[in-house]
Length: 267
Image 1 (spheres, one colour):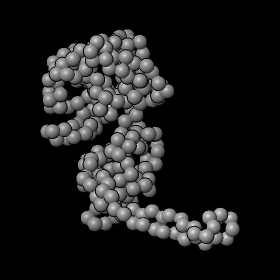
Image 2 (image 1 turned 180 degrees about the horizontal axis):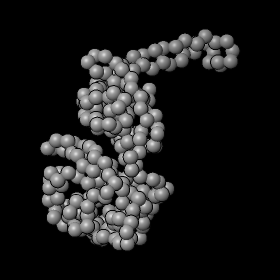
Image 3 (image 1 turned 180 degrees about the vertical axis):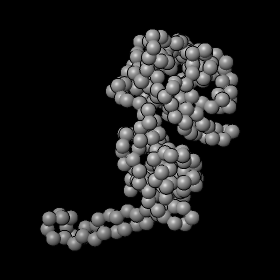
Image 4 (image 1 turned 135 degrees about the vertical axis):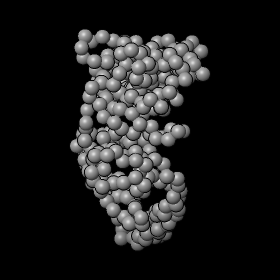
C-alpha cells in the first residue's frame, strides 16, 4: 500500500464501515501509530459521517502534555486495510480539545494503532513510500479495551531488595546421590524497579466500585509484584478477558489494602 508522509510521519488510506445500515465504506486517512495501544482513533466530524456510534461509553485514554485525555469508546462493524478485512474493531473518539491538538495535519481522520498492527508483520519502505502487511496468527483475535476503569501511570523508581539462594556441595565428592553435605548460600542485593500508581478511576467502573482510588500506589497485581510488569503489560491485564478476576494490593496513607473486582465488558 502507498504511504504519504507529513512531518516525517507515515499516513495510509484505509476504509471503515461506520454503521450496519447499507454497509457503506468510508475512505479515511490514518496515521500509522505503532506506539499507540488502541486499535483505531477517529476524529469526530473530520468527515461528515464520522460520528460517535449510539452505543459508547466515556473513558480515559491516557496522559498528554495538556493533561488527562478523555473520550468515548465504541466499536465499528469493519475496518478494511489493503486486501484485509477486520471485523468489529474497537474505536476511540477523542474529546474536542485533544482532537484539535492531534489534528495538525488537516487531512488526517485518525490513527491505526498497535491493536491492529500487531495482527500483521509490518514492513515500512520509506524510500519507495510503501507499507507491506502480512497477517500473522493474531489476525483473528478479538478486540478488547481497558475493562477495569483504572488509568495507571509510571510513578518513578523504587529500590527493591531481592535475594538469590545457591546450592553448594561439599568439595570432596560432587555426586549428590552419595549422602554429600549440601549447604545453601543466600545473597541479598538491591535493584531499582518501576513503581506505578493509579492516576484516575472511572466513576461506577469495576475498580471504582471495589474501592480503589486515585493516588493509590500499586504493590501487587494478582499476587505478583507490580514492579515485575511493564506499564503495557498492566494495561494488557485489564484487557484480557471479560469477567476475569483481578486482585490489586495497594498502599494508601501508609496502609496496605487488597481489592478484588472482575473486568466488565461494556460494549
